[in-house]
Structures are given as structure tokens and as C-alpha cells.
Length: 246
Image 1 (tube, rainbow, N blue to C red):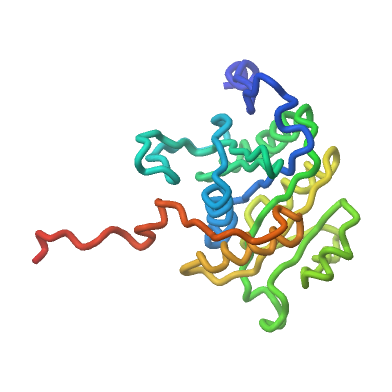
Image 2: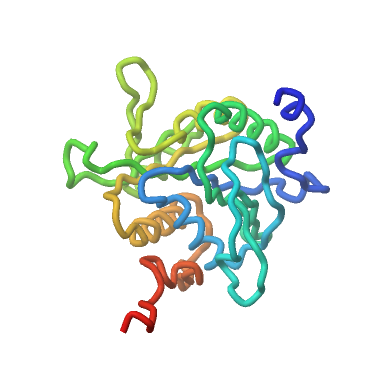
């Protein structure tokens, strides 16, 4: 196993490492309601992102399926893929599977090493958390942590700074590996963790709110476009009942 890990291919295979220079990279984490993944789905379809490459790592649980964005192309998608939009200078890694706990730390460090040569402008980690953790349910649902000077932008958009616990560490119940990934990436890149507190259920509205919040916070576009839903959302709660049952 050790020899396999030492000889495994590069995490992100891009021939020209300057292709993403100056881009903002959006990273969704596996968290409550899959809100980050749903928001990235909306981002990819609304702005017609192009697939750049497939990302493989032994920490990512393998999966394969139909193209979630173009049902007419007959292509397949895997557990982790990199997409980009040249005009917006935005890239995103869509993570459709979970990460093995024992290999998670190595994955985060390998990811940090892989993105350093890309000369990214900054990295935005998306996460969600259980909203019953909030002391006042009427509070704003968006919080952030960042190593950038963005307090004014965040405050003007009603996004509050997340305070660490007594031991100086951040604990966000339901956010998965978000804080650990942030702690590793912040050492070498400009990094912001954006968290939305949600209730589990139909979390498509939460994804839409997260996308719109990103429009404002990171100046994705001058005006909000018409949101395009991916074809994979057509049967979120399953397909139509089979005719045979009647």
C-alpha cells in the first residue's frame, strides 16, 4: 500500500499549470444536506463551466455515473472533477463522494501541494452546518473564516465572522472536514471558508442562496444571471412511478 501511494499519479493533471493563474477556486466539502455540492452544480450549469480534468486520489471513494449536466452527450462523470470558466476566471472542484477518514489528511496535503503551482488568486471553501447549533434561529445563516482582509465585504453582506472555541480551534457541527481543510490551505494560499447553517431536507433553496451570496461576496459577475438547474435535479426525489404498479 505504501509503495502504491508513493507512485500514484499527480492529483491534478494539467499540461499547462498557468491555465488557472489568477483564478478563484471553489471547493465544496461533504456536509449537511450536500448544500456545497448543490451550489457548485448550479454554478457549473448557470455559467456553462467546461470540464478540465478528472481528479483521482485513494482517499476519495470511487463512483461513476451519467453526466449530471448534459444528459444528451452520453459522457460519464466520476467522484471528483475539475471545472473552469475562462471568462470569469473561476474554477471549481466538484466532489461527489466522501473521503476516507484514514487517508483524509494525506488528501488535504496532496491537494494543497497540487494547487500551489496553479498560482490561484484565492480559494473559497463551501460548507454547511446544522442550524440547530445557532443560539438564535433568527440570526444570519452565513458565517465565515478567512486569512484575507475581507471584513468590510462580509459585514456589508450580512456574513458574520465565526468565532473559535475556547481552545482556539473551530468546531462546526455537520461541516465534515471543512475546518481541517481550511487550516491546511490557509498556510500557503489566500483562503476563505463560507458556511451556511441549514436544516436537512430539500436543500435546493439553500444551494441557491449560497450561490447568490457568492455572487456578491466574490464579485463573480456584475449582474445575477438566470439560474439554470442541472438535468440531474429533474428527479431529486426519484423518478415517476412505474406504470406497471397500476
